[in-house]
Length: 222
Image (cartoon, rainbow, N blue to C red; front, side, top):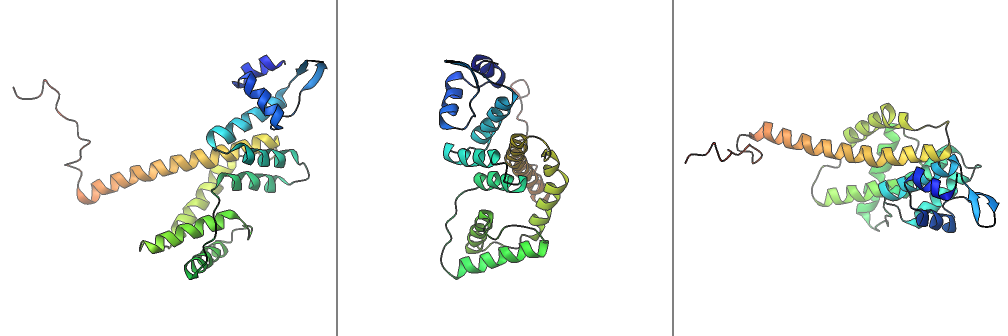
């Protein structure tokens, strides 16, 4: 297909496609003339992945390049490729020197060990969770996260990972992981907030809830 057809099929503007080509995010098409190239389904898959990383993952171009490089590196296992994408989705955390950080990091490492999870010692998500535990401790909150970890494990093993096509195109696997990580995460967070509202109503009564339907004009006394 021509670049104009690729644009229509992918929903990505021609100017944006040319930008991705210049930046190396999208591989070049098959040259059929001095000023014309042909594109195929592999370009459509790559554009879908770029859009997922950009629009859903909210990744900067520099991070997208790293993920694309991992996708293109066939010597890299699918597990390491997916790890590159997963790590790119999280924030960059700088370890904080001090006893609080060391204690929290020890708690994270122990939790992972108790669950039997196979997680790299250098995984940035360890530092992300460590920072969260430090803040929770400073606020006097419980830092026992075992129930949360077990819930996460159940969701990942029984739902989320089943959506990743490990045996399919590498782009498709990364796209599914990114979409699942971000969108399932958003859905879970929204469900927790709904559960909070419901449990608050159950514990302290919802009769004076501001969400009650207000009487319409015809129902109000004149």
